[in-house]
Every structure is written in structure tokens, then in C-alpha cells.
Length: 231
Image 1 (cartoon, one colour):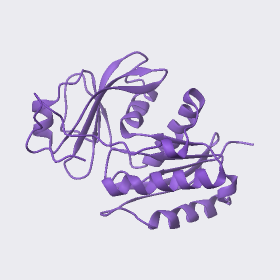
Image 2 (tube, one colour; image 1 turned 45 degrees about the vertical axis):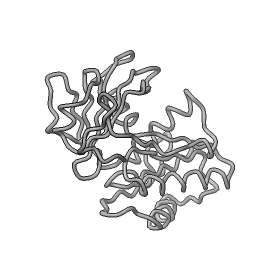
Image 3 (cartoon, one colour; image 1 turned 135 degrees about the horizontal axis):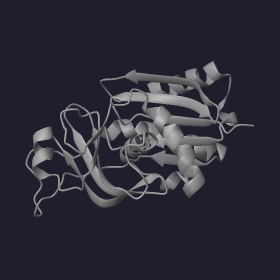
């Protein structure tokens, strides 16, 4: 039978739960929230499973978005996926926001294998997260150059990363070689698709090895800009 994937992403203002397989999305729920979804995510998981006519024992792969994003929010979905995988002895895969944005850009033909790029994604309010890396085997691999910015002005002034830029959900950050992506309204669908790709190329990880993807304020000469608060 087709591999059933339950993907959860609670790291962004729009949280989501998706049940999908190779044939497509079986059931999903996405919603905008002002605060971390806390226990609401478990009610959503139950609702999505019921809509698809499945239970947790029929899930073959668990996946979670692991940030960057809300400190509390991203831990909710990540911990849920890890707990289910551990209890049911199933594989689990995480996907961060930089990987998801690059995956979307690659699927649309905006970038290609081997490209060195900067991925810039929106967070809550005016937050901006950025990372530099290379597209390798169809996946974004960061090189350690990354940072958090409190607003567009600080990003434009201090980001040292390579071009082209992959810019998601930040239309004001325009540049001649920027690949613009709308802020995804269905983040868990992207996590599910990317998890399937990562499972085939990299294999699953143990639940204990999956950690939140935090990004520190960018450091310029050893000093973080004063408006960078950290996430």
C-alpha cells in the first residue's frame, strides 16, 4: 500500500497538520493563530485522521517542521511527531523552513542543482530568518552562515550571504536576482513532500536526534546588531 505520512508544522503563524501519501493529500487542516497552538494540535491531528478514515497505527512516517520560528510553537509539533514515532516505532523526519523554501523554489525551476543561494524567510511580525547554502541532491544544505533579523532594514544592511536570494513571504525584500515566493498558506503540505524526499535520500532519524532549528542574531565583527532579539 501507499506510505501514509503525517506531517505537523507549528513553527509559523500558520500551523498545519497534513495526512498524505504518494497519491496526494488525504486530509489537512491549516489555520492562522496568534499564540502557540498547544494542545489544539492534538485535536487537529485526531480530526485529520478521522477525516481520512485512518488511525495512528496506519501512519508509516511522521514528519515535523522544526523551525526557525516561535520558540514554543515549533516545539509543540516537533515533540508530537517525535512522541508518536517513538511510541509506534516509526521513522521520523524533520524539515526546516530554509529547506522547505528551497524545495519550493527548486520545484518551480527557479533554482537548480549546485546553485549557491541565500534563503530568506518570514517569521512572526517583522522577523526575518536567513541562511546561506548550496542545493545538493535536490536539497538545501546550509554552510553555517545564517542569522535572525528584527526587520527588513537590518537585514538589508547586514546580511552578507550569497546571491541569488530565495525570498519567501517578504515581497519588500526585492532584488534583481531574487526568486520571490509567496508565504505558504499550507506549510505542512510542503513538510510532507520534503519528508518523503529526505527519507529516500538521507533516511530517517531517531526521535532523540531531532532538535529545534534555532537561528541566532547575525554577528558582525563579533557584535550582534542592537535590534536583533534572537529566536
